[in-house]
Length: 408
Ligand code: GLV
Ligand code: MN
Ligand code: MN
Image 1: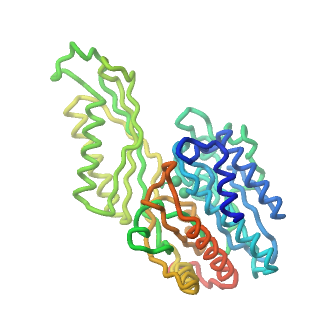
Image 2: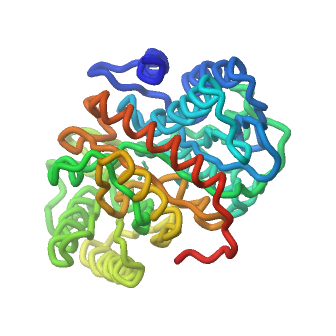
Image 3: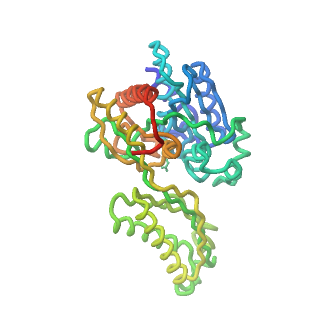
C-alpha cells in the first residue's frame, strides 16, 4: 500500500540500528527527508510553499477559501522511530491522492504541512516551526536560536536550502487536524484502535548549569567538595520524588546531562542538565516549577555551588476544539470503530494551531507504548485506519462552517 511504502522509503533516509531514524532538525539528513517528501508533493501537483523558518506547505487548490490543513513533522530525535511525525505528513498526502483518484473534490482546499523542528531535540523550543507559523515567536528570535551542537538555526536552514520566501505568521487555515501515533500505552492497554485527542499537556523545559570546584578525586575530602555531579544527582532524585508525590499525570525527566571535564578521577567543574516537567494542569505545573526552584536554592547552598537556569520551552496545557473533537468521534463511529478520548502526553504542532483555528488530533495505538526509540511500532492496519479517519475528518471539516473562534 502506498502510505506504508512511503513510510518505509522515508525511513530509508538516515536509518539507525533497530529500524528507526536520526534526522535531527536542519541537518543534511533532515534536508534529504524534505527533498523526498517535497518530490511527492510535486508529483501530486500540490502548490508547494516554503516559509522563512523552513515550514513546507503543500496545498491542493481544488476550491476557494482557506484550506483545511493537516500535517506534522519529519525531523526526529537522535534515536527516533519511523512513525513519529512522518506518519501524519505522509497520511496527509495519502488523503489528497486518494480523493484525487476517487474524483472527489472537497469544498475547500486541503493542505499538508511539514513543520520545522517539532522535536526540539536539536534546537529549543520544540514545535518551533508551527509556533512561528502562528505568530507565537518572532522570525528573528527563531533564526537566532543556537543548537545543542552550537550551530545557528538560520545558518543550518540555509545550508539545507529551505530558507524560503513565504512570510510568517502564515495564512490561518479553516481548521487543523493532525494524525499521529499515540506514543504511549493507553490505547493498547484498553483495546482501542483510535483515539480522539482532547488536548496536550503543559510542557516546561529548563537547562540547569551547576558550577562548582573541579578538584582531585582522591585528595579532596568529601566535606570540602563543591561537586556539580552530586548536585545533579540530588536534583534527579528530587524530581522523581516530586512526580511520585504528585501522582499521575505528573511526569519529570532528566534526559541530557554533560559533565566537565567528564573524567574518572576529577571532581567536575560543571554539570549541565535538562529538566522536562509536564502536567495537564497549569496550576500543578507551576507548583512543580516552584518546588524545583526552591530545591535548587537549598541544594546550591548545601554544596556551595552556583546554579543558573535557562528556559528552553514553556507551553501551557492546550484544550482542543470540542467541535473538531466531536467530528472525529463521529467519523470513528461511522467506521464502527469507537474512539477513546485522551489528552496527549507529547507535544505536537497541532497545539500551536489551536491558538488560531479549530483544531484537534487523531491517535492510533503504539505497540507497547514505545516511542522516541527505534523500536516504535504501530500495526499496518491501524496506520491505514487512521489515514481513512483523517480523510473523512478533513472532508467534514471542509464542509463545516465554524461561526466563532471559541473552543467549546
Ligand atoms: C516532542 O516529541 C515532545 O513531546 O517532546
Ligand atoms: Mn511527533
Ligand atoms: Mn517526537
